[in-house]
Amino acid sequence: MYPTIRLRRNRKHQWLRDLVSETTLLPQHLVYPIFITEGHGVREEVKTAPGINRLSIDEMLKDVAKAAKLGIKAVALFPVVPMDLKNEGADEAYNLDNLVCRAIRSIKNAEIEIGVICDVALDPYTIHGHDGVFKDGDVDNDLSVEALCNQALVLAKAGADIVAPSDMMDGRVGAIRDFLDDEGFEHVGILAYAAKYSSKFYGPFRDVVGSKVSLGEKGKATYQMDIRNSLEAMREIEFDINEGADMVMVKPGMPYLDVVCAAVQNFDVPVFAYQVSGEYAMIRHAANAGCFRFEDAMMESLIAFRRAGATAIFTYAAIEIAGML
Ligand code: PBG
Image (tube, rainbow, N blue to C red; front, top):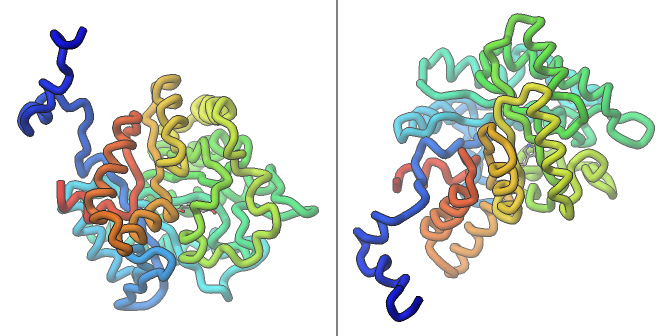
């Protein structure tokens, strides 16, 4: 006991603080999400989240090459689909030549040494902005699962290394696994957005992809998780692992680190966490208002993800932070 024991002794020098530190943050722990848009030479900033851009494929390739050079191991691709290609059935999602498929192929053709993760969910392609197929006033689970299998197959055919269902339909991980295996894509991994909450923090993302249009009063509350629950998150994660998920995701990140921590303690698969657009925007806007330096606060938040036990973190700040590391 004090005064014999003095915990401040281990904090006296920088070298000593480094020596006894419990957590590491390295570029290999970061995944860089990228929004792709049609066109050439396009690098469009999003007003609600300065620092997040829409990139045409040629500009995207520059960022992907930069990420690889900095030691980032994977990018996550999200298409910004032109309004006239969206419809009720999300038909563009099954087009082997759609924007995201062209983006995947361009990364693979450029032979950049980096993993390509692709979102499986219909929201960029539907007019209402929901992640699945709408029927009788709600997103229909089983019809959506069928659609998501087809979307996952198209992404696998285009060369995606990992498909990441972010839709929260029941049973989609097992269905996608079977479907991909039957079609000869048993080598393609599944990162399951297992505990994805119905969160306000997705606001800027929905601005970027234009999926906010007509989500309706209840938003995605009938399929994304209720923010009050964490035991339910463990059930979601358990289901997805049993259905064949190679890794699971908790999302959003920072307000949900309790869920990340519980997932890490309860399961033996890699647990990823997503620092979503709204979290990024909060740090960015606060920094712009002079509250702190963006890099410092961002670094602290990402270390907190790792301290909670996250294997890897999706963050829009991946390139900036990897550069500092
Ligand atoms: C779509 C999807 C969303 C995000 C990732 N995939 C938005 C949503 O569910 O409405 C959010 C990511 C972010 O906010 O950064 N299924």
